Image (cartoon, rainbow, N blue to C red; front, top):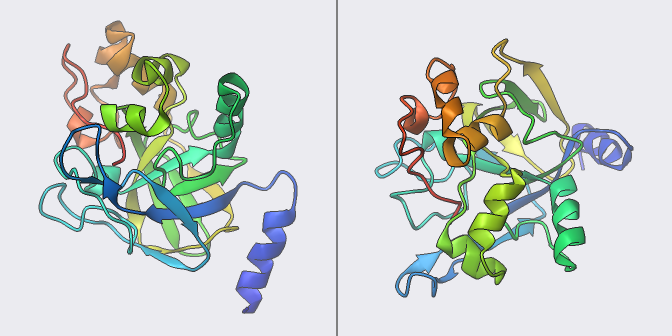
Length: 238
């Protein structure tokens, strides 16, 4: 292990450090929720360096921002605005207490499980530096779908997840780089508009009266750039 990676390993053990807990890649499996096809919602932590780059357009690009990850529902998932999905370990802990079950990192289909990062409180368009090179930008929250509900095995999960307003964040890749478990996370720049992932999620799914506030926000996923009463048409992370 090089000097830089030893420093990261030390940081991973320090309390209060914002960091990546795990990097998770898809394990393809049949998708019984839709009756046909394959899903990549199941993700498992890996113990090696993963390269992250902008994948390009949703349907014609590389789909996922992480090399080695796979996305199968390319109509609703992946592309530059949904290149990476992050979810906080603290939010997993919150769900564990309410569902009375253990929830392993990657279960929600996230690529990056974080610790010490207020993912839902991230301001849309801010810049996250992860490790020495990688820079990501939050664009919107994760919209729960039937595949996610089937994966969880919880009745009315889509509604439960939505009401909790803990969606995690999709991110675009501003500067490519590598990511590994233990990498530190820092916010380099935060837009003055102050609209967070959680606030935008509420506007699209439960409080449509807030939609006009999102129209001029720089950094919002392009799918959401012109809000309408019908809301966001995207899906989860499968």
